[in-house]
Length: 107
Image 1: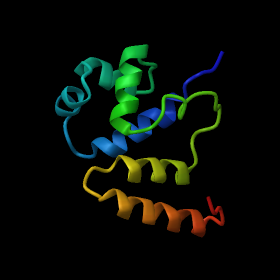
Image 2: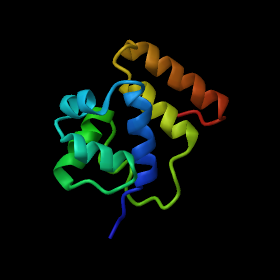
Image 3: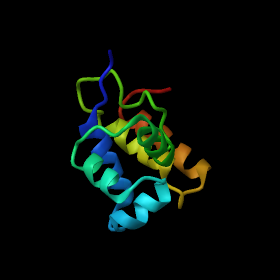
């Protein structure tokens, strides 16, 4: 059975939420305020909420699964660039390519 890396999930939600309030973001995601608060505090969400949160973060549901180690800073930055609605997709992909080159990991 795979486990969900709740620390990375929490970190990515907080990063994308920024200074916006929990209530606003919970409504945007389609989960309750209490659910979002619990997940940000490292608790495991129910499957429906988990799927909605992954959709909002624009990552696959297996992004947080099966990894006992937290996601690397590079993985988090890449996921956040892909989830950023203010960046054109072409710009985000160009930045991701530069990050991969900087890490010596040409994809």
